[in-house]
Image (tube, rainbow, N blue to C red):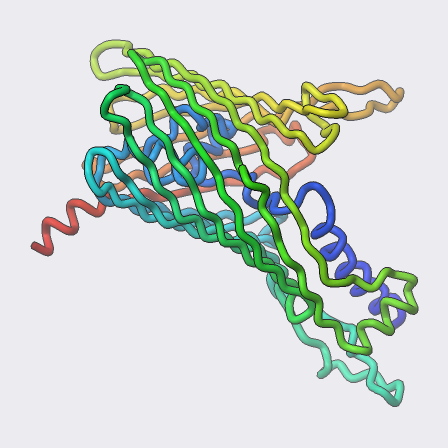
Length: 361
């Protein structure tokens, strides 16, 4: 029985500890939409639909529909973690576009056994409860397309974040993202300053006396209310679109994720700056079908002889558009288990709501 209490205490401490390190709000770095995931998240310069609210809000100005809806559901670690996204974009006019996005990453039905033993020392399995550890974010996005500089657009996100661990802890946060895109004769460039003003989460803990007692017995630190900061991350991207004739075209995109919070396990790293490059390609026929691939997640891992070797992640994907109304995208990530994470099959959906609006009228 003591082992069960220890296991629960360690699980809770793992979540509390995660809330205090430099990888805060890391669920907002996973990526959304199967197209972007198949291209190894190389979307900073080429995002041009409702999903641009996440990748680079400036790309919203290039939406070719007035109303767009996008949905995605993914599961990680054999279904233990659920990852969901929904986005709605509205093109006000040729210059202004807005979007609303919702992202959730959570683990549900976690067993809480901290109250399994009552005050008299009796084991009562009816006292077992369940809780969720979930991260949620709402993105309010705006993009503006300049009239005097053709191909230049700017965008911004206002992020509202709430993170919770059952009834034990809750955090609320706020942050801003800023984006820029420029397109000229098939060449595309983009930059996004994620968490540009630093994103904060204010944590509040509500632990019962029995949970505190379990923590004390297991030698764990009692968490205290505090403020967590996510410092800015700079995303840079470049791309080239090739017209191949007879309706065929290709796109090559290269992105660099630049972080300034100390050394990370990336391809290029230092005590001040770490750079994570990733490359994506796409071959399409008109707007009907597209094949995609991407390479990213370069990491150095120690071998059996103590030497570091470089590993990478390969992604593949497919996109199909039905009557220019519904787009279904698929991504197969982590092909061949070349990195530590498990591979996943991910589907996403994008719908042109203009057609439905016309039918209603």
